[in-house]
Image 1 (cartoon, helix red, strand yellow):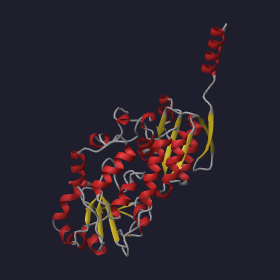
Image 2 (cartoon, rainbow, N blue to C red):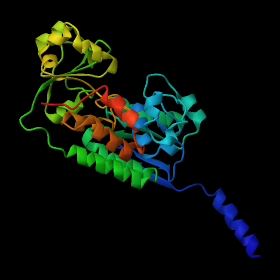
Image 3 (cartoon, rainbow, N blue to C red):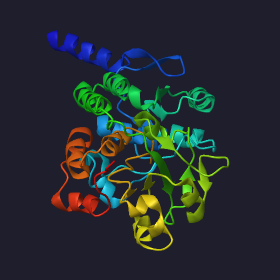
Image 4 (cartoon, rainbow, N blue to C red):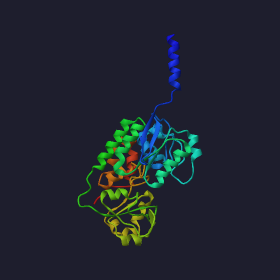
Length: 325
């Protein structure tokens, strides 16, 4: 009799769906989600970085596959993850999403009307709970803890949140409000515009971002146009751009002559804005004068759960140096 009762209880437990929880996201919607989601789909690269730090074993895949060197710096659970559709583009990926059978979709980044609408439409079309979280730098501790609660990873989420709080609390260099130019591309001539998400890290420091006149997030420039802007600091996003700083006419620019031209580190993700996720915390600490090797070693161990090897640290050392003011 006891065995029969136990069997019935087990059958009942197996038939009862997992409990649901209700979460209010950055769109203001109250979204009902599974109590313990195991199959989580990041909507785009910023969410990919966030989830790789907090819950890599629950990710279905990566919308933007990192290179081999970058993967070697992330938690081992990310090593075998496949490419998955990027949901934050313009293409309708409803069928692709449903084929993956996620329990939950998480987007992270700009809370603009476009991304709010995208989160609503994704959930409406797929029937899968979809959450959008605010990607602002000062919101990282709160968002990390929220994700930790939702995905039942409170320990790692708390480590990420405390690391973020420590970096956000670092004082800016006294009396330092430089004019900075930030550019992408192997030629260093796609210059980021002021007052965009890309340059948000500089605004937090109180730095003035300079760029040629024009429209768009990135604007084409020439070395002569950069000379006219006369930035105090130049930061280039692409490691392959490093050799140009030793050639004419770059070498004649004041920032280059003064030793204030830098290559932004990019291990395992860009430290300034590629993608605009929690990786920007490293850039913030570096721009405030932190030693890049010390920062990389500590941040990687705490946030991505992997200790960098000597060779990995030497690779970072080969592309950058400490910011001076």
